[in-house]
Length: 241
Image 1: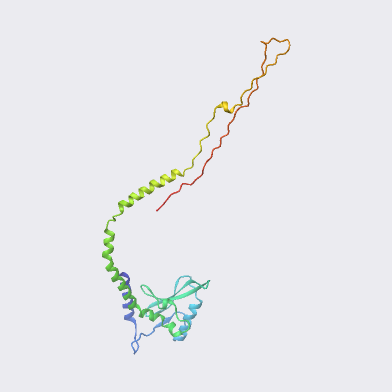
Image 2: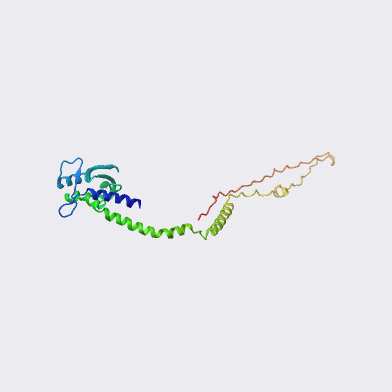
């Protein structure tokens, strides 16, 4: 409704300023700021040259006016057949920017190039009508939308329960995938690891008494164990809805 109101202000401003010819057609009261020509052919060529050569780098630059409404040109980047280029559009500025033929002027017809802006203003009633139709359709949808917004969602409790289950499942998965360390192997009976001692033969030197025996005991090697820790590196996974 705000947009429609501002457009209606622009239309009223235009209707109060526009002049008509004997056939009731609006007079094309176009003036260009830096163009010496005043005829349609000269002004048309000037506008076409601007469209081909100007680069405003996205800014809106004034080039003239019509019935008190500024006319501006703006440059936009475009890719044509894989090649980056610049294309220029023209707008008539009021409370909003109005365009005819999407802002592109005719490049082969000087008359059409000059009448682009008066046509943009002449289309104001049609643009306002389109917005009014959209507005009426939106108004019909408002009660239904308000009812939807005010309604309590019946699935709220179910959603909370599902979120709790999901959180529990994520914790369980994280615990299952956490790195686990293998416990070292328990030591077996030392007797199994220690070589069995063999009886030592006693040698009796000549002339020695049997009770003066000497023994030689072989010392067994110190038993050892080797344990290997296996560590599994896993990244805990999480499941999201």
